[in-house]
Length: 193
Image (cartoon, rainbow, N blue to C red; front, side, top):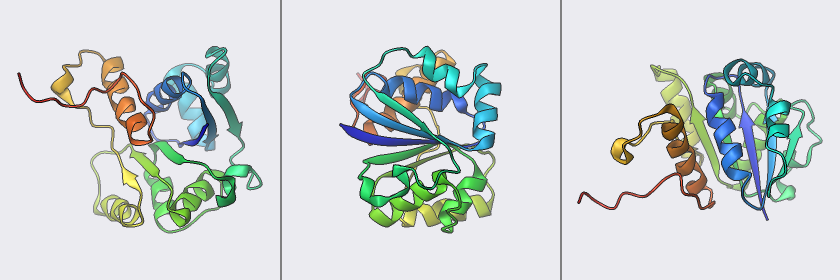
């Protein structure tokens, strides 16, 4: 069973995390979720339901979903010895991104990201900001050089999406592919016909 960490910060784009968890919930995966305080507030504001209510609304799933307190540095995901497979921070605020890029790990979300870097585990960062300042770009470069994958939620239009939902699923499908979870949301480019 894969062990995946999903970190949710206070950046706009909670729908991305919501869809990713929905997509992963159909698979035999242990999904460890950790939200910042603003991540919780923005999730509720943007989706219209609290994170806890959203998890309950999924009902019975193939996925074991565990929510961790961001202040609990004794959680299993705070240690490299726990052996998780990947972490996705979705959406990732520029503040959280900067802290991770500079080794500032004073919360569970930041510590888990720090563990990914030091253990050379897949860390996918889905930044949500525009336009990007030179500081943002330098911080992303620092993370990329440390082994993280930077995946801004940029839709591929070759699948001809017509709704926000289709665009969101396409982005989430690409993320799921990147962490080795097969899905139907993103079809690879086969060339023009």
